[in-house]
Each structure stands twice: as C-alpha cells, then as structure tokens.
Length: 252
Image 1 (cartoon, rainbow, N blue to C red):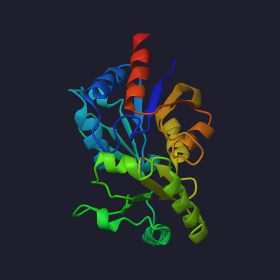
Image 2: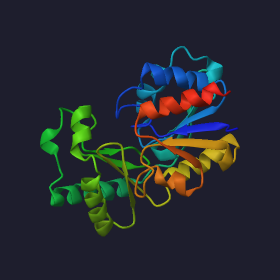
Image 3: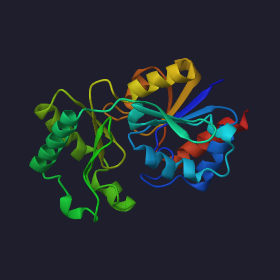
Image 4: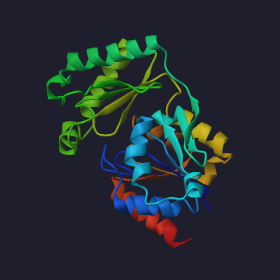
C-alpha cells in the first residue's frame, strides 16, 4: 500500500498551464483522505495555487495538511499549517547564476532561430527567474494551449537548444518539460533533489511513493524520478491520471 502519491503537473494533472479540471480536483480531494499528495513541478508557487489548490472543492484544513507543494522541481517546499501556506525551505540561485543561464539560453535560442519574441503577448516573457531555477518558455507563459502544443510536439527544437546550452555553459543542467519549456538548474537541483527532500520531510521510503508523470523518457524532467527507482506511472495526459486514480480509490 502506497503512502504518497506524487505528481508532475503539466500534462499530468492538467492541460498545460491551465487549472485542473473538476474531475481531477474531486479525485485529489478524495485522495487526501488516504494519501499524502505531492505535486512537484518546475512552476512557481502562485501557479500551484492557481492551477491546483484554488480548484479544490471545499477541502478541510485537515485535508490540506496532507497536500505538499514541491515548487521549482522541489527546490522550494510549501505546506499548510492549518491556517495558511508556509515555506519550509528554499534553495535559490545567485544573481550571477541567473544572469549566466538567461544569457546562455537566449544566445542558444537565437542562434538556432527559436527565439520567438515577436509572438509574445504584452507583459509576457520568454525567460523567467523562478528563484531556484530559470525557465525558458518559447512562446511565453500566456500563449494559448493550441499554439504551445504545436510549437515543439516531438521536443526536437528544445533538444537542440539544450545541446547548444550545454556547449555554452556546461556547468548547469537543462531539462525539457511541459510543452515549450526548458528548466535550467545547478547540477543535482532537479526532481531527485525534490523527491529526496520529500522522503525526508514526510519520513517515508521510496517504496511508499507512486509517481505520475508524462516526461519520463531520458532527458525529460520526470526521468530523474524513474532513475531513483521510485514506482512511476507514465501518463499521456490528465485523463490517464484520472483513470488511474479512480482505479486506486476503487480498491481502497
């Protein structure tokens, strides 16, 4: 019997960059009565709130105590203390590291012809400082879902950007995630870091966890979890996740 259900977010719990559906929200609330629920993603804390927490239907404070938010691949951790969300830890990049990563990604994308600044919506940005990681989003955060899915469905564009970034600044790691994103981090600050801290914070073992993710292939941002030996279900979308959760709840 697993004690923890951990989830990637984009393409696992939702349509990329959109709030979870009523179905997923209902299933997660039911799961909170039986498991520790741990979303872990490259997104910022406020996106965890918008896309997941705010969509849950009337969860009790006791249920929310079983929801653990592992932000920026788990390099930031938030939990509910009965009244509000509190930050447990944060491992930010230095200003110099943020500047170097940002410069590197922009140079690589421009060299390869993948810098889509002309397609940004007002106020949006391609490179975002998420404190403990820097994220490249080719079309920005506000682009429509259809445009994002169409931009790099086979990840080939981002693979080329990553390869060039590794030539320019090999001291950092680069992971493909979501639909148009690349997360840049210092070595070791990927989901292995987050899941290792999850084990410590929740006082559980690897065999206590079941992980759901869509980028479990080598180079994907869920692959480090697979390499850790944590039981993983690879999904194509949130419908696959919902199907699996209904099966899990059905046997409890």
